[in-house]
Image (cartoon, rainbow, N blue to C red):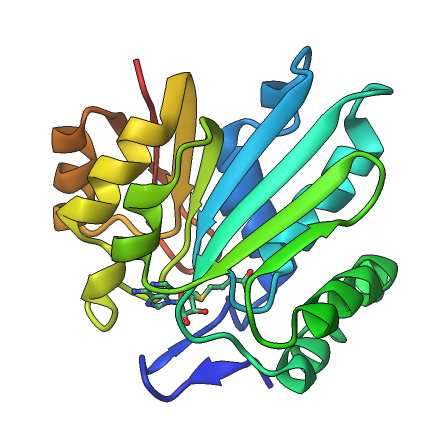
Length: 217
Ligand SMILES: C[S@@+](CC[C@H](N)C(=O)[O-])C[C@H]1O[C@@H](n2cnc3c(N)ncnc32)[C@H](O)[C@@H]1O
């Protein structure tokens, strides 16, 4: 059973295979691992931390491909943090990420339901700010290399796909920085384009025909 939100009438990730979806949409969609080659510290930012699956998939890929001494910083925002039990149960589906999930669980538990600020390994750090993306992102200052735009579907979670969010995402992105998202909704495509991104519609995961990826020229 895939974890579902009653509030947003949507699933946290694909019922087909959430990890495969993450790899297709967010990792490949942002040209990872290629994009972090040669970068001393690569910064990923995400809208909607949820279960942390996207973080774990990015961290695992980083471990497998990064050069010695490279660092990964992953920042996310979450308005409705899940319980530790929900996160544990949702992530237990994938044996290959179990050791990574255990480390996340410890950081999540230590945060006690508040913001997470954790050095997960010597080279990987995680920051999850609890709050509304429309209030949290405009206050961020750290330049971002790649975005995982992962709210629930825009029709049921319009707050996550606003001009305020798109403007903050664009402002924080360095030249050549990228975003990827599972949705291809017209107003999201136009919003990100109007914010200043070059946006492309590309094949989505599984039964989803299209998704969006983009670059800040
Ligand atoms: C599709 S889920 C994210 C899945 C997640 N990336 C993962 O790896 O499990 C969307 C997330 O966005 C959060 N969310 C919805 N509206 C929000 C808002 N306005 N600000 C911040 N987070 C929000 C939801 O609570 C949910 O956790």
